[in-house]
Image (cartoon, rainbow, N blue to C red):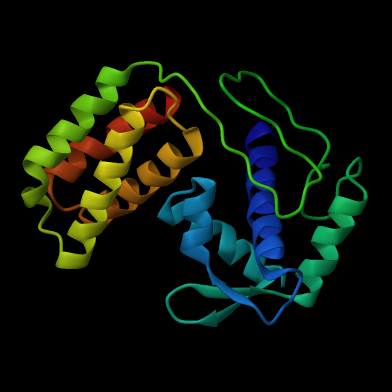
Length: 208
C-alpha cells in the first residue's frame, strides 16, 4: 500500500510541476525528461509516470523527444486536488497528507504555485561522494560517450564538486546533478564502469 501511495504522490508531483510550468495552459509544451530530472526521477521512472498520465488523459505527447502538454482534463484534475487538499481524487492521495517515516535536512512545502525552495544540508559522508566522482573522472573514457554527453558529464561533475566544497551544499542541486549522471550512466549501461557505479547511486542519495 505504501508503494502505491508513493507512486501516486510522484505522479501528482509531476503533473503539478507541469501545471505550474504551463500556467494551466494546455498549449504550452515541455520536455518530460527535464521535468523528471528537476524532480529527481530517473529516466525509466519518468517514462513510467508519463505513460500512466498519458493513458489516463491527464497529459498528451506533443512531439518526439519527450515533449508533452497537460490536457484540459489534467488541469481540471490538478485544480480539483489543490482546491480540496484534504480529499483524495481518482488519481492522487490527499495533497495535505504527507507521511514521513524518516526525514533529515528536509523541508515541506504545500499549497504553493510557482514556488521554489533551496535546502542547505550537511552531507552524511562526503568521502563517498568524492570517491565516486574521482572514479568517474579517472575512468570516464570507458563509457565511450559522444561529445555532447561527455560535456554534460563534465558539467555535472563540476557542479557536484562545487557543492561538495561548499560550506552550505544545496540538496536540490545535488539531486539534479545526480539524476543527470544516472541518466548518462544508464545510456552507457553496456560498459563495466557504468555497471560498477550505478548500484552506488542509491547510497549517495541516502546520504542527502
